[in-house]
Amino acid sequence: MSVLVVAEHVRGELRPVTLELVSAARDLGGPVAVAVVAGDPSALVEAVDVEGVDEILTVAVEPDAFETDVVQAAVEALIAEREPDAVLLGFTVDSMGYGPALAAKLGLGFASDVFALRREDGGVVAERSFYGAKVNAEVEFPGHERVVLLVRPTSWAPSAGGGGATVTEVAAPAVQSRARHRDWVEVEAGDVDITTADFLLSVGRGIGDKENLEQFEELAERMGATLSSSRPLVDAGWMPNARQVGQSGKTVKPKVYLALGISGAVQHLAGMKTSGTIVAVNSDPEAAIFNVAHYGAVADLFDVAEELEKLF
Amino acid sequence: MKIVVCVKQVASLGDEVEFTSDERDVDPDFLDYALNEWDSYATEEALRLRESSGDGEVVVATVGDEDAEEAMRRALAMGADRGIRVWGDGLAGADPITVARALAEVVRDESPDLVLAGVQSSDAVQAATGTALAELLGLPRVAVVTKIELGDGTATVHRELEGGLLDVVEVDVPCVLTIQTGINEPRYATLRAIKQAEQKPIEEREPGDLGAPAARVRRMFVPPRGEGAEMLDGEPAAIAQRIKEIVEERLR
Ligand SMILES: Cc1cc2nc3c(=O)[nH]c(=O)nc-3n(C[C@H](O)[C@H](O)[C@H](O)COP(=O)(O)OP(=O)(O)OC[C@H]3O[C@@H](n4cnc5c(N)ncnc54)[C@H](O)[C@@H]3O)c2cc1C
Image (cartoon, rainbow over all chains, first blue to last red):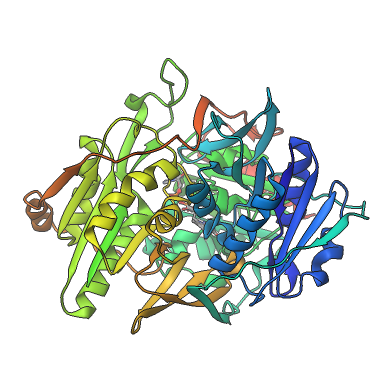
């Protein structure tokens, strides 16, 4: 019984999810090894040498930037060598590129967006959501001695402290990379930095129509709030990229986050759930946003907006 | 150029839920169905690539029962040429690895130049089928793509990372790409196109060997509400008043 965690990094920086994976691994129990597959893995060893890590496996690869074939081959080699019964990856864009492939190729148990983990009678039981995060499920992996799990970021507190894990270098397997990193393109900076705002008025698909946006721009101004949004409004070109809250947008932590017509998809919550006070207005009493909100109102957002206009 | 697009009919819950008697899933009476949002972007992208290449074929493939043809008809109404529906034992409520196994055989038989799938389905959020399918087909893959430029034997794509950072990736073609929302603006199907789509062929296939499921739902349940979540009741005016008080207190 042992757990293999794969460290995530981008442009030389360790991603915080890595240390959360270590905490998740400790919940499962058994020795924990962290794999660092990178151009210069030694540069990341210190950052992953935290409480609960027994061994750090370093694999030096070319290039340092994530390439799915390269990372998959390295992790496959580590699985063959260490025979962990659980492999934990972040539920992240990088992992989406190879985690399911590992499971398909090696015939492993698989689940993603996992936010709770335990062992029962030796087997792994994972919790995840279905149907717009309105229901949760316990998932088991009958007949599988090994599972690959993609773990929802921010579900576990990052492991810290500790240190002194054994470091083992492992040779990178030869692999032909069929999807090659060429360049990075940064997100365009916007007219405002929503990450520094104390008060965000955040609108979602519930506002229905582009024509309605102006009303909320005005409302935000009256209330002294900065306007932000969920992804669909950015996809539709109604709102600039820089104002998107969530996993592929900005992570925000305002004093007040007022969400109008946002369902509370996991990738949205990833960007705002640590806000000081979350207030959500949604016409659907079962909307997942109410699971993280401090205050909620089941109401039509336009009715509430109209009343707010009178008060500010 | 032949493109296969993997699409899924997704289910969403209204504001009431009951579970099946074995508690492993939601009672279907409480579910509404639609074409997965990500798959409509994937379908649109395939149609655009077909259009810019001058000719070719867009084939949509789905794993689902007969009712799931409705979602596939949406993709056909957008302009896809024909459909393939895979269904058989072991596929109801199947995990994404099993779904990928069911798709692999039919996609392989089509020998496409490109395979597209949505990043994830809105009802299961596994973000796994496309990547697993690529592995089973022995194809390169890129997940979470927001731009595709086809070249000679390769494609240059944007892979959108956390925080919006874009990774420019050169990928050998044929390949599997999982498509992110926002890559394009999916077209609406006209009423005429919807009617015409009824005539487009949908081939039915049985899956080959699916192997052991990668996971099994043991129990579904309604999650507990977040601690401290306080519901503001009353008329909109009362709700607005409370919101004002909360905002003023927190910002003080
Ligand atoms: C890799 C990846 C990254 C992603 N990154 C992000 C991200 O950074 N940010 C992000 O937001 N999403 C992101 N998403 C998308 C995410 O999964 C959801 O699709 C998205 O958050 C949904 O936005 P929404 O809540 O506005 O829309 P919906 O889910 O459509 O919700 C609309 C809500 O409005 C409510 N509503 C409708 N009308 C009214 C009314 N009149 N009054 C009150 N309420 C009403 C509805 O009940 C519903 O709950 C990402 C997805 C992927 C796969």
